[in-house]
View 1 (cartoon, rainbow, N blue to C red):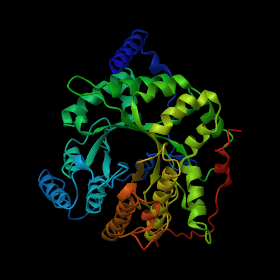
View 2 (view 1 turned 90 degrees about the horizontal axis):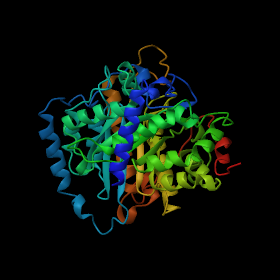
View 3 (view 1 turned 90 degrees about the vertical axis):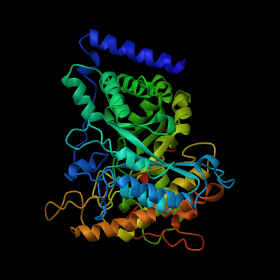
View 4 (view 1 turned 135 degrees about the vertical axis):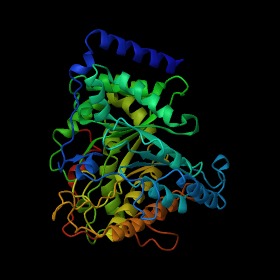
Length: 470
């Protein structure tokens, strides 16, 4: 009944907006990310490289329908060594939902995760739309992710900027755009009844700033996406939220914006019905993590202050944030970074592949350690990372990277190793009995991956202010 009421309310808003000359189209408050902005964390960073998304960087990969059979064979071999997802082992006290935003290379990511999968986890992989028209879905690719087995779930990406432009060109609302998107998702064969759903790329900074009609527009969009369309059941989806860099030198504007937003109870109450995962783009920066001669405890505590800062701020707030806290403690997860190598956008990761492996290990450790320190709140069994390898090197000094251009074959090999460390960190951290944070650092008896030494790195003290409302 509640879902139906939400859907009808969305339709009424759509009709009212259309009847008044598409009121929501007049000033939706959208703020487009700027390429290379060092203070902004955004999924559009991959687009800024000019690279063309591909399903796999593996030179042996064939992007054709016959690939489904080979992926199914891989899944069958893995299933022979793992219990059924429908009958989790008794030691899986904590079921983990592991989520990935991908800009490219989503099939290889899935294969590497499958090769070292946790029996206590389900894996969700977002598939980017066609780069030339981001309202167009890649309809073969969901079949390929699905072929990896019942633990793997494709996510259909609603690209906000593209669909916002689509509906404005037609004098329509975001609700209309959501309906058209869902029709295309259904035509592609997505099945929301088996754990598949939609993801929003991305909730723009205009919402945090309360620009124009950004919040009513976003509520309408999420209401409509969650309500579904005929022959497609309702589904609470996943939202990726544009963020601010760990390297920022000034939070005097950002923190008050968050504080005001957290007290907008109607906004949080509304989206709580429609969103199952609220993924803050909190991509750590190696230069504010890898401080030499510091302990793992010091580094991961510093990481957690940044990764979890919206939740920590909410929990320090006045009574007016109660609605936001109730939602965030059930839905919040930091979207960390496995994107390599970048100077900005996904955080600074322009270091060696070895340092990237250590960076991933300690991010995984930090998220798991934080959840175990507070077992009844977020992020509990949720974990999320962005995967966006890039080796474009279109000029001698690419704007997004500081390491030299790498031979494509070698780059594929190096990123293979990064993916293997990523899969192992997740597997070992979310393993028996709910897992142990130390598993992110290596298998039992060998936790050597949790170490760091980035030249001139230093912790940013500004993030220490977020557990304090004042």
